[in-house]
Amino acid sequence: MDLEIFDETNQVSEEKIELVRKVLDYAGRYIKLPDDTEMSVTLMDNKRIHEINKQYRGVDKPTDVISFAIEETSDDDLPIILPDDEEFDVPKNIGDIMVSMDKVKEQAEYLEHSEERELGFLVVHGFLHLNGYDHMRKEDEEVMFGLQREILDAYGLKK
Image (cartoon, rainbow, N blue to C red; front, side):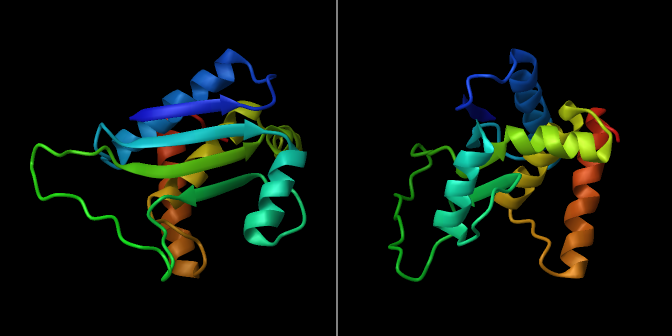
């Protein structure tokens, strides 16, 4: 997977950045994404994620993770037409994940587990949203949260 990670806080350790990379690479292989799949993760503070949450979701408070899937389109969007040529192989960009590192710390303390576990949980949660999983209905929630737990447990980030 082609993964770009941006640390807007300039305070995230190399170990945590590498954890994000490894967990998402593992999750991509787990759900059998093509190797050339692209995505990005931006690690930020509560102030920045609050701004994004308010601007794009109309929610006036910080949140832990936000996902923006590239393939989500509105009726006003024009389709992108690509040639039917086997040699014209464009990597699939699935979108962007934004994580509040302040929330990682707060929630890890509240839930009494490591910040690494919380960070892994949030990036896998966002990753699954980018891949079409949701938790709006009870049955969808069971599928998404079950897969999320499977991935984290198999990777070794257990509660």
